Length: 318
Image (tube, rainbow, N blue to C red; front, side, top):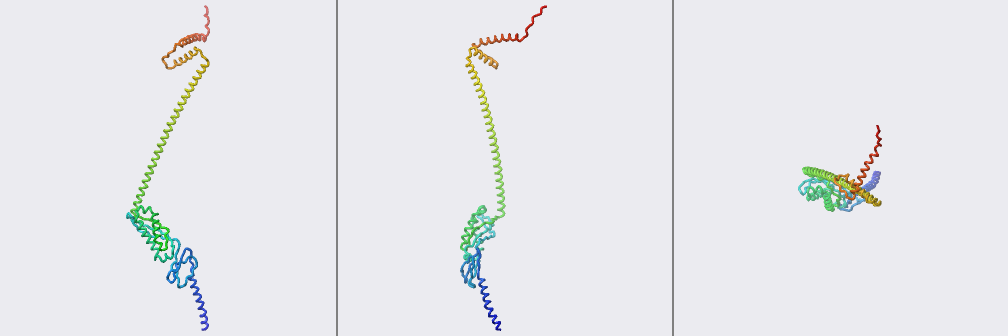
């Protein structure tokens, strides 16, 4: 009995030490990166522990909430909204937020995610209610900016910062979708007709420009040909005049007498007679020279055949 009593008395301290070590180990907490622990002491808020090793007083302190400081994304289910022109559509949103104050996040609202979802739905309905259908479909950036500003302001007392809000899908009624598809088809056909008309117009303009340039080029060519022809004729006339001037110059330098001048005049009248003129008036000064030339020509014509014919043989006497 004494042995058992001694063993029991020795085990009690050992058990106590083990229990104390276990309790101490369980109350040594290591807070990880991007996390925060909200600590309560005797049921009241005590502190927010950041990254590092912390010791919690057993039975007096407890971890009320472990909060993640990372940016979080939540996708809310589609919400029915009504536009200003009474069109009901379904819109689902994506919310990007971050917890900036763990204490306010823990004690500010009972169910933060449910509160944010309901707040997002009501804010979206208020914004869409001031817009018509076409504005809703084409103003996503404006809607996102308004929702982010309103949600960030509303969730600030909860220790939540809303970084971004996106409209994921906008689903109008089926009949509206069919009407939009018909409208888009008609718009595409209209654009196609406009493009074809513009193409034909440009083609006709190019053809007209080509014909215009061709006419201009032909006119320029005819003009150049006429100019070259006129220049050639002028050059020929100039050469004839120069030749005539040279001949007169040489004639003057030779000091011709009156008879030579009359002879030249006679040659000129002879050239005129070879043309189509039917009447020629011969000055009296050269009429005698003309008769002299005619007599000389007759004598020459009578003498020339005699020179060309063979000598006649004397008749043979019988």
